[in-house]
Amino acid sequence: MAETQGTVLIAGLGNEALRDEGIGIHVLRALAGRPLPPHIRLWEGATDGLALLGRLEGVRRLVLVDAMDMRRPAGALAVTPWEQLQRRRPAERTSLHGIGILDALELASTLELLPAEALIVGVQPGEIAPGLDLSPALARALPAAVQATLNAALAPFGAEEKPWRSVAGS
Image 1 (cartoon, rainbow, N blue to C red):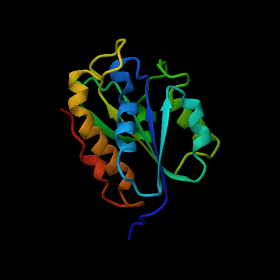
Image 2: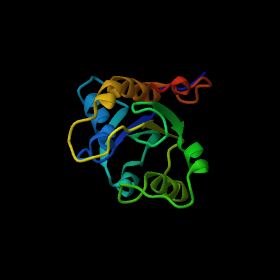
Image 3: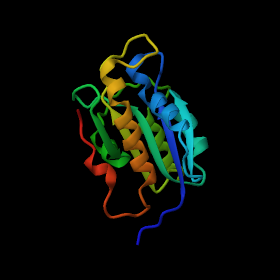
């Protein structure tokens, strides 16, 4: 039987001054307005991937929410274990974050700080341009991104069936 308790950290990432690049921050703020179980912590990581390392002590599951180029329509969602993204990432990469989040996760793994479960809720951006509001496509996708994040955070630990496996794009 799967365990149901353990600390979960939901980290909203992105630069909210660049419209859709800030989707992780928008998801986190939507979650902050909801009653959540006490074992779930929220952290607004903005663009500082390295600052994540100081937040991982005692965390059993990490759920990162960020804009992710998947070459799909704007607003498409994917919830993926970080190891799968690690295997697919290009050798040369760029990030709008000070240190790329995959680099931060790799460092956390090397330092044995990485939680047992680390997931990334990726949302395909439509517009990355100056502005504080999400594009219309991502504004429509926001409720689904919030729900996908909650599903990933609330799933029982060690569950064979992962509810985030069925997340689809728009």
